[in-house]
Length: 254
Image 1 (cartoon, helix red, strand yellow):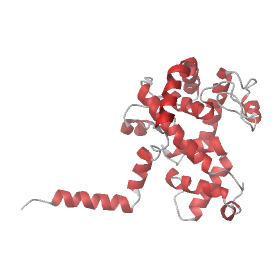
Image 2 (cartoon, rainbow, N blue to C red):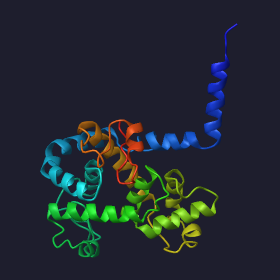
Image 3 (tube, rainbow, N blue to C red):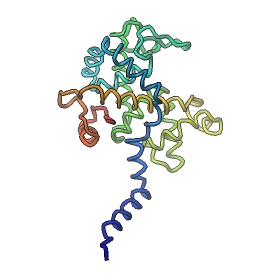
Image 4 (tube, rainbow, N blue to C red):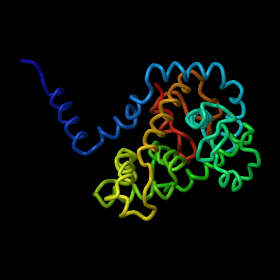
């Protein structure tokens, strides 16, 4: 008769990680964003990488190194914000390649939001500042996903969603849970319980997923940075384990 002990152990293992939530976490970490970039969007993004990114790549690298970030993540944020258009302006008054508000630019010492170098510098400083506010106990990659959500919707609204998750018995330190509660900030039943009130909570969820996907493509098309201590590596295992000081951005490599 065939020895089925290995199959039984494998089945027991998968049953265990399904029950304790580990499998959901792994699915979120590596596949939670893969449905966000359709064929047309991917083709457009690659076209812009080839036509636009070269103008700003050096500046992304410089400012990312200053703030101890992965430049490809910073570039992905810039693409999500403006498609790397330095003169971008929104109806709400944010403008520039990194789409900074007037108040944020002033706080960061940025005088001309439409200057791409200044905008990238401001965006890098602002993201690094936000990321430092995320509790250090939150591990990567969740810490970066939450920082991105905060960059989009504001730290107060992110905290509201985390509190709602905790009140509902969910772990507020896992992005897998928090991204389920952010959209509830659009519903009065939920946002009336929060400190900061209504927010367009679906937006930061899509925002994070889009940036993760853009980052994947950039990590695939661009060679990893080489300077040890600042740069993410190629493989997911190396990437997520490399951040011993909490300074690196995670790399969801395709």
